[in-house]
Amino acid sequence: MHILFIGYGKTSRRIAKQLFQQGHQITTVSRSPKDDDFAQHLIQDVQQLDLSGTQPIDVVYVLLSPQHSTLEAYQQTYVDTVAPIVQALHGHPIQKIIIVSSTRVYGEQLGERIDDESDLHPSDAQAQLLLDMERLWQLAYPSQSIIVRPTGIYGTSIARMIKLAETTKTYPNIHWSNRIHIEDLARFLAYLIHVEHPEHTYICSNNQPLPLHTIIQWFQRHLNLPELILQSDCESGKRIFADRVLGSGFKLEHPDCFEDYAALLN
Image (cartoon, rainbow, N blue to C red; front, side, top):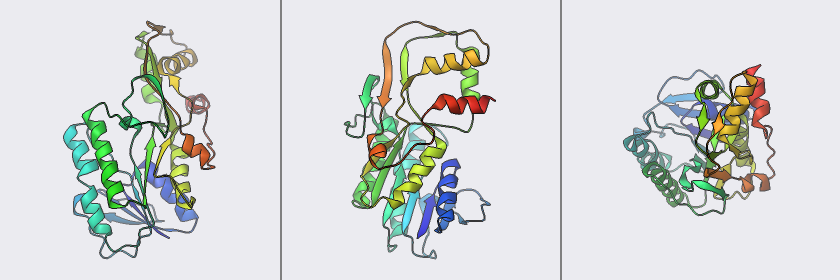
């Protein structure tokens, strides 16, 4: 199959390499030059995308991310790109279009359990824009679109966690956090092209919600730093479970983030 990547960062590159090794033809679209020799790279503005000279495209991955967290950046990156991409894909025999969104579209913040059947209640304007993007894709490709909502992606750096360990003396409450290793995310996204009857949406997480303060304490112990003091047992955040990923037959290779953190520390 001919597979197009719109947005070509760390996750896209991992997916593309796997699919190339399976024998697929890879084309990418990004704003800056790329040098992977297993793909054809197009340098284009997504807002003015031109695929008229491209061989027929069978599968599309859309992995875009804003350069800033402002409303304007979210609007331009997620919502305003849908129409020009749909227009550029007109006439191509699209079988699947896989769009990476975010679990931010679930607005719960009191430690609630969230899964693929949970209702969507965006709690801020950026989350609403992500949901607007999802719905535009589902409207444009009702049967071909697959929305994937990852939790926090980790696995390439622990610099942020080390800084938190060094600077955090107290933590206000039990804040639930959720994560997916970048390799598992990329493997699942590549796996989706082989799923014969995929769901319309998937949460992608390692199914191990953890209070953030316990992760910081783990780093503090391993770095021989004083451990933070938890100030309250009130809960915030949400506990996210990827039931459909497990139901699809996909197997995680990184279910335990502490094993991965230990490997990155050593």
